[in-house]
Length: 476
Image 1 (cartoon, rainbow, N blue to C red):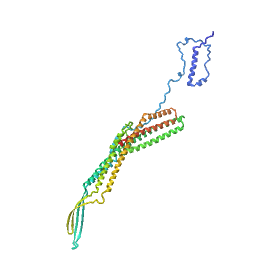
Image 2 (cartoon, helix red, strand yellow; image 1 turned 60 degrees about the vertical axis):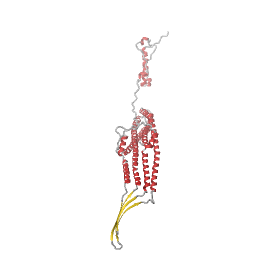
Image 3 (cartoon, helix red, strand yellow; image 1 turned 90 degrees about the horizontal axis):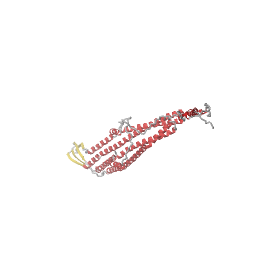
Image 4 (cartoon, rainbow, N blue to C red; image 1 turned 120 degrees about the vertical axis):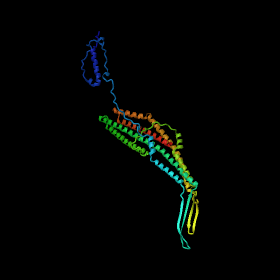
């Protein structure tokens, strides 16, 4: 009967220690450990004493594993600060609103003095139309010699006459003068409507360039951070000099675009300040941000409102009435004036006194030219009204469609396009900071972000200006 080969506890412990040493070599160099010669003595299993079950009582054995020699938690991911991404937020507390700028323009715009002068001219025309013709005084002094006696005596003649204008002719001239007041008022209302639209557009144009300036300011900060990071990677040997050159080019381009945007903003501010007569100054601030929510106005209602009460049509209607009054005056212009007077004279052989009367005979001129000219001017104004109807209908519809286009663009950006562009930049930025990817990846993502930012800011500006032009076309 063959003898049973048993392994004592101490021998098993020696074997497990050797296995554990090999496992520990995973962190200190497996190759080096395997290359070392064995330092433990050869164990003859035939000479080891038998192992009994009592040897395992109270001391349970545990097989070693590789996990015992590795950390149980992964190293923390470095905290990477995401770049600041700007989406067109402008305005702030303490600045001017559209209403406050409008009030300044209403009080201080230099064009109001023009309408005051026009009103004064219309009043002067009415005064002239109401004035009576001036009387005429005819005087004659001299001497006369007698042919018979040679005696010389003084003679004189004194005449006084008053031109009298026919009532119908005078009334027609006064009616034409009175028709000038509605024309001046119509011009003022039309300019007020244009001024409101100009202030709104200039306001949002200033905010648009302010948004672009701030956008490029954030791009300068972003490109500066990219340049600094690429410089560090070049020093560590993780990136080539071509990436550093590209980063510098992008930084210089961002700085140039920021300067251009800053100057354009100053130009827009000067245009807005001019509408207020210079009362805003050169360093004013604006308070309102771009609206994001635009309702859908009724196009048919807007067209009817424009064609029924637009200030331009009101001014043209007043001009047409004035032209009709001018036709009536020209038709009566040839009516003859009556002149009544008296004359007293002293002659050589006696005195005389007489009452005089004179009237013009319209034999050769009945003012056909003046009548034809007045009728042509009235026809011209009538044609301008027809053109204005067509232009207003076009302006309302074009502004409406532009407003709907900009409204849809804002919705598309807000519903995911902005978020996608921002996430692409953030992911590329994090990957680049962790040493992965190349500079070309972050360059592409940043340019896509710039394109998205510009498109979004442009959509906000287009919507605001389209709304201003829509209100101008409607006449409000």
